[in-house]
Length: 263
Image (cartoon, rainbow, N blue to C red; front, top):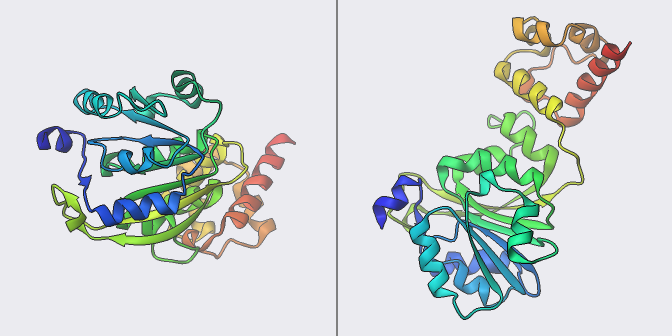
C-alpha cells in the first residue's frame, strides 16, 4: 500500500485533528463537495457525515475499490475512478448526477501541485481547502516584492483569493515526508481563463529579478511582443523589477501591448 502511495507522490494525512480542521474550514454542511484524491478515506469519512453529496475522484484503482467498499451503503457519496487532471467539471457532474459543485477539498500530492491548482481555474466553485507543500503555499500567498512572488503567485492572485490557514508538520503524514505542509483556502474570482495573458506572465517571470526594461530586450520577449518597449515607456514601469510588479501593473503593460497589436 505504501509503495502505491509513493508511486503517486502521496503521503497520507493521518492526523485526526488536522483532518477535522480541514472539514471545519470547508464547512460542507448541506453542500455538494468534490474531494480530489480520496486515498484511504481518512478525509472522506468525516466529509460524508456532513456533506449533502460527496464526490470523490481517485486515480489509484486499489483506493477506488477501498472507497467503494467503504461507502457502499452511502447514497450521498459517489466514487469516480479517474485522473482529475484529465477530466472536466461536466463529466464529473454527469457521473455523480449532481447539478453543481459547491466546494472542493484535497490533500494534494506534491508532484501535481501546480497542474492541480491551474486545473481549478476551469471549475466553478465557492471555496476550496487544499493541503500542499508549505513552500508552495508560501509562494501562492506571496505579495509583490516578496522573495516568493513568482509566476505561481501572480497566477494564484489573478484567478483566486488565497488565504493561508495553518502549517501542518510532516509528522501528520504517513509515510512521513521530508518537508512540512500548509493548508490554504481559495475563493474563485470571476475571471475567464486568458491563456495569452498566462503565457505573457510565464515569459515575463523567467526574468523575475531583472527590470522590466531589461527583460523587454530578451529575445523571446522581443519576438513575441515587438511593441513591449513602447508599452513600457507609456506605463513608466521600466525601472521596476519583475518580481515587484502587481497584477494590475502587469495588466497595464499587457493591455497596452494588445492595443498596439490591433493598430
